[in-house]
Each structure stands twice: as structure tokens, then as C-alpha cells.
Length: 290
Image (cartoon, rainbow, N blue to C red):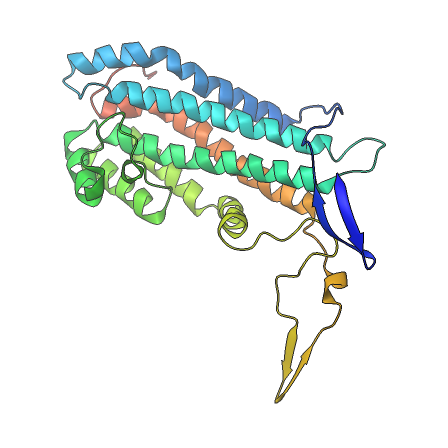
């Protein structure tokens, strides 16, 4: 790390690398995330079988491959999230002085991959529902700009974010389909969207990406006004830069891990319900145990 020190405080910091050679043992949480990553990625092996079943059952060409492929891609995303978490902890252990700036950057990247996986979850659910004609009619009415969600078209209107609108649309479409398991898929995504752990992660990303990401070094500019108003008098704090304290990286890590716990639970439950949900919408790719 390179720093620029002045007036007894650090006002700037930058790095030439994010990496450090320190061993870290995976936690139980890490192993769970890697197992979920493996299970979701291995779904890619079923893409051809899903497409053949779709042709037999009169579904749109390419839709099953798109669904299975997006499932596998989401598996890689959550695996990368776990990897970045391990790398973040490497900066926070060992006899050498810990480095919070690279650790924080890696935690934020970990959170970004986690959040992108959540957006994948709603989009896969919507595409499963599009296999059912009644559900598809409802979704096409709710998302006019998606133009019927044609498979393999990469326009942002066809890939809505995980939001109250997209979740409600999935729930309504699942109810219209009449399928029990596909309705549970929608409820799993709804529970994730309403989970306080997930929303804390999403809010943190919104602050960092869209608004004001506080600096990671002492001496940064505080995200508050230096002016104080007391009745008719106003005063300005002088030297308030020296009072600035950067975010607690350990709290950020705990917040990210908590959000990942919510995501992991949703992904495990979702994949368990997928075989029955596909049968609900007329695509019997997988055997469903009684």
C-alpha cells in the first residue's frame, strides 16, 4: 500500500495489488457455498436433455438451455463470492499488520457477486414460469418491454432485477400456473427479497455504488456537513478531517457473510424444488421422488 501522510492524518491510499500470500482455512460457511456452487454448476450437464424434452413437449426452442445455462452460471457466481471472501480474510490474518483497504475491496466484490446471484435467481424463476402458457401471458403483460423474453437476447429489459415488482410478478404467474412446486420457487425468491440480511447487503452496495462510499483511511472526508446549526447561530468544525474514522471492515465482513447465509439458504431450497417445478410447467426433465 502507498500512502500520502500530512497533518497527522492519512488522506489517501492506493494499492499495486489486492493479493497477499497468507494461508486461510475455509470455514463451514465457505464449504457450504462451494458445495452450492458445485451443485448449481453441474446442472449444466442437463442442458441437452432439457432441450430435447422441450421439443417433445412443444416448448420454445432455446428456453430450457437458457434456464439450465443460467443456473450453471449462477453457481459460478456464488463460488466466486466465496473465493473473494477467503481472499479478504487473508489480508486480516498473520503476524504482519493487517490491511483493511484491500480486505474491504474484496468484501465489496464478494457482496457484488452475491447480489448478482440474487438477480439471477429471480430471472431463472421467471424463465421457468415462461414455460407455462398461462403464466407466460401474465408475465408478458407485466413486462411489456421484454417483448416476450425471447431466449438468448441480451437486453436489460429482459433481465429484471430482484425487486418487489419482479417478485410479485413471479408469485402471480406461479399462482396462475396452478403448480405447487413452481409456486414455492417464487416464495423462496420472495423470502430472500424480504430478508433483512439480504436487504442490508443490498443497501450497502447501493451506498457504495450509487451514492457515497466512505474512504478506507483515517483522515478521509466525513460524509456529513461540517456545519452545526443551533437556533439562529451557525458554526463550522475546523479540522474535522482528523476526526474521521473509516468503516469497520470486520462489521462489513459480518454483514456480507450474513447476506450470503440468506442467499445460500434460498439457493439450496430453490434447487430442491426445481424438478417438481419443471414438471408443473410441462417440462419433466428430472425424476421427482414421491
